[in-house]
Image 1 (tube, rainbow, N blue to C red):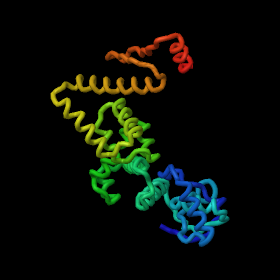
Image 2 (image 1 turned 90 degrees about the horizontal axis):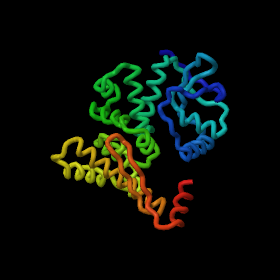
Image 3 (image 1 turned 45 degrees about the horizontal axis):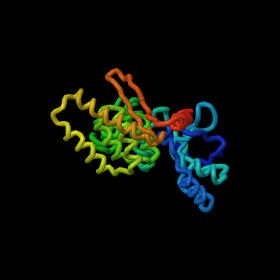
Image 4 (image 1 turned 180 degrees about the horizontal axis):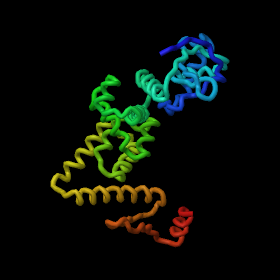
Length: 264
């Protein structure tokens, strides 16, 4: 593959559309920008000729963004002729090797490689230098509901918390425990222990009975949350079809007016 070194104006460089990293720490970018202002950009970025105009960034987006913040007009770059698939592959591999991706970004990057290159988990594991269980466990994270994925991406909970929540089969249960982890600052070990004890308490119950108990636990927690909000006793009932009622008890006209005001 032919390549050459050049200094390219920033205005001719466009971001990589296959960039797996979605979140860039602004404070770290500012620190890097300051370093670039003082010392210049030591390591060149990698680009490829664009089909439209100028060049497309392949690797080095943090350096590219920091250089923009630092006010540089051009960057040292290695120009390579990559295909679309090679461009995506290099961008993903560079980020993974630099450990710049959060767990969800990493899992999504693996999923992209599997879909684009039609790889098995074993093949991807060998390609990335990882174990097959590691790849499979990372990809399993993507089975979690969006609020949990966002919580991991925003570092509100850890990858360990997310793995523990995967042991729960129902989305409602997973979201209930997500809220509990955040409100009570539960450690991964505390969550694993609580979920294990919950299962041990129900060893001989049918699947339907286990689901019923989990739903009841979820409803009781929601009652507590509503009671905190309104300041009055709340009772929630629900049947198997999902229909039910929410009752708020009050003792006076003033209580009634307060509740109505809260609802508005």
